[in-house]
Image 1 (tube, rainbow, N blue to C red):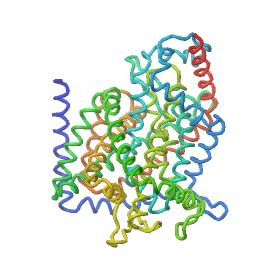
Image 2: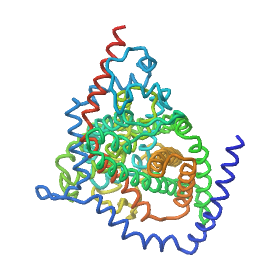
Image 3: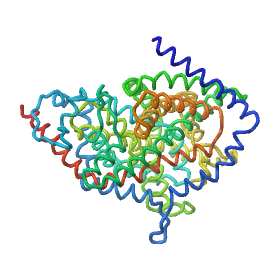
Image 4: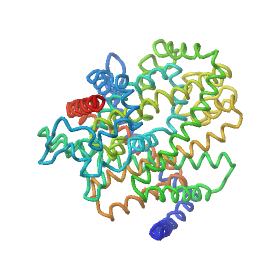
Length: 543
């Protein structure tokens, strides 16, 4: 307890000069000057990541092609694991097969790499740091958030109801990608002498490709991934989240003044600091409580609205299917709708980005494939369930109110017909829920803050693991990263550096390039691990 107080006092001592600077900068408009100067760089970076190639007359972003083709290949190769392994995933999360991790089944195969028995890694590390459910909750908390609330609203407004269909498709095939990357995350993780787990794409890229005699390529890809992940953790996984939380709180309570964002930022930084100081075990213990609670409230409210409009459910799905293949004029054609749907889903569930594999790597198991099947639930929860519910609520709302014209969204803003004003995705979602459940915007504000908080603490772990890969596992590196991370919490809430956030948010999608290259080389290892897991499950059942 004394160490915790010392840490918090040290944190406040470091934060105070930054807070003063942030407030003065806001008052002097310095943040706007920084934003304007950096915007060309941010725009170039975003355009670079979304570089298109022309196919059959259509400009398709290379990163989305890589995501779609990779996910489709894994889905077919592993015989639709999102469907065939769904029951196994539920049973694994429930702990039905935990006996196998406690030596209830004699291992059927021995896999030796670099003189070490890979299948005993779980024993050497006391079988990891967190449970299957905690690992899933941590990873889900990093993906379920503003993308499900604001992003879906913008996607529907821009791409029409048909974008929902392609979001669902992306979520379904993304389940296969998550299965592959998270299996590899556990298989190639490092375990410290104290039992601390270090895992993620950095490790399966370097160690896995080394096994395939591509040591140089693996090292380069691992370093690129780690750099991008650190940047993404400071921006899209942190500053953007605290910024949106501050905006929502300021709007909800009609707060004004330059110090408001600073105060909110300090409070958030302290709360985040208390959690992340404790490491993955503390993060997991928090997310396993927050995620089910906040997701439960949001899903319950969505179901209330869906059942209130149940007579229109057929019409809504009719619009979704019709719009997926015969979009309305002005939406950029069918390819445009596909791009909107897939891009939104990719940002939402991060399947292929590899970030979730970092959280899943810390699981208590000696069966890599066991965590792979658990991980495939993540895109299902995030995209297939929550994003679809949000989409249905917005479609119902627009069917009744005619609030906006599909295809009328610019720069993540939607033109509202009645007022003639452009509003953000969060505001549109709030209007939709409020139309059936008056006052729900206040609940939604709380949900957004909780989503933002859980996303920040999860991304702090992703960024820290990447930081340690680059700079070592010493105490100094650990403290340096956490201080920087907490500073970005305050900066994000106090300033409006849209360019910085835009730049780092694009890094999340940039993670796809090094990660997917590794997955396409290493997927045969996943097949081997899945075979072992299934074989021992059968042995357990026959006992």
